[in-house]
Length: 154
Image 1 (tube, rainbow, N blue to C red):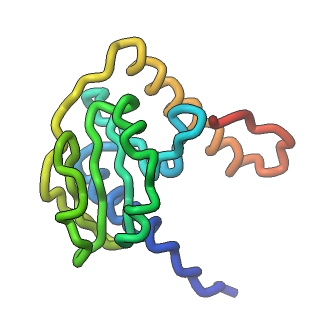
Image 2 (image 1 turned 30 degrees about the horizontal axis):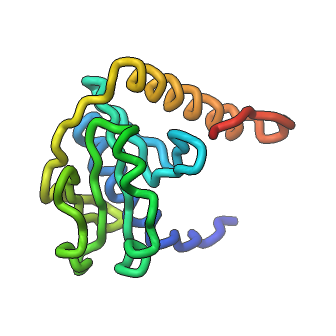
């Protein structure tokens, strides 16, 4: 018996399309990543060159206006992107230091590249290690869901 697919939350619909598009660019991503205490980004990405990207998905103007933390994310990435659905009022999104992606659940298009602001080597190493360890812990949780302790992600 196959259960009907559950609809995804609007923000995750956008993240899914971005994730699929980034995969075609050889960029891997992990959703709902915690780079530091008090921050949780929608997609943390790692390029083949070792760049760390953060993509914040905003499904509506209210969703964007409610986000007071996004500027704190800039210190944890080489590039920062907004990802929004078609029809989103893009003029409200900050342009300085930010890229822009338009997405639906199936694909995305990068409308504006994010400028490169290189992380310090120590911060990059910490981020890459945390990305890898978080991905490994999540995979272990999927393979062994009965484990009592998978480990901290944040």
